[in-house]
Image (cartoon, rainbow, N blue to C red; front, side, top):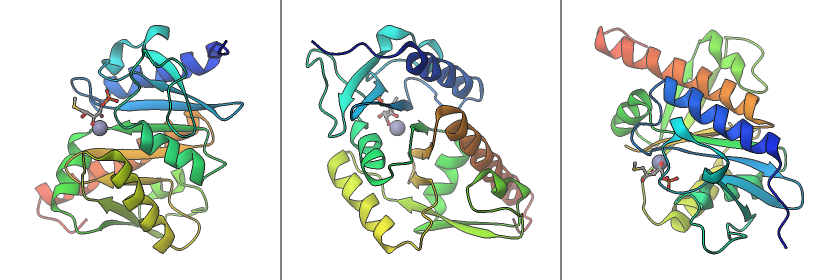
Length: 209
Ligand SMILES: CSC[C@@H](O)[C@@H](O)C(=O)COP(=O)(O)O
Ligand SMILES: [Zn+2]
């Protein structure tokens, strides 16, 4: 008999979904969220639920390979990206995925990365104690084959210098960000979305970002 999902994990996902919806980062039923649980388990949103209105019934458990504990329930279509992050980064405790206007527009016009430089909000990321820094945010081509997309993400990580930035964009699709817990993942997401919104605003006034 499967263990129940801890109430704290459910509440973290429900509250984070609400916060992301308030920012218009999860339109329609876009986005997915997860929290690592003890025992190589992951609590993740079920597929097709609106993230503004999550409750305990919208959250289910999978193993680190993405297999549902209850095969009658369908986890997020992008479960493989969450589980791939947990497998690669033992320190990852929560993963969030959103579709903002800024991450969608900018990823569509980018090459294989977006350079973020000179922003105070870079300090939202680990290992960047000052604005006087630059990061290359990876941009992966979108792919409906999630196992293949996860392999492309892993190939990119393998080419990146440590420490790996805890986030990436999928072209025309959205962003993935992770952190040691849900609060940290959300803080990183908010910092990243703020910088992407600044890049958008700079383009719209014809200024160098
Ligand atoms: C509303 S279309 C968005 C989906 O295709 C997908 O990208 C997404 O973010 C949500 O999928 P889900 O299966 O609900 O987790
Ligand atoms: Zn998505």
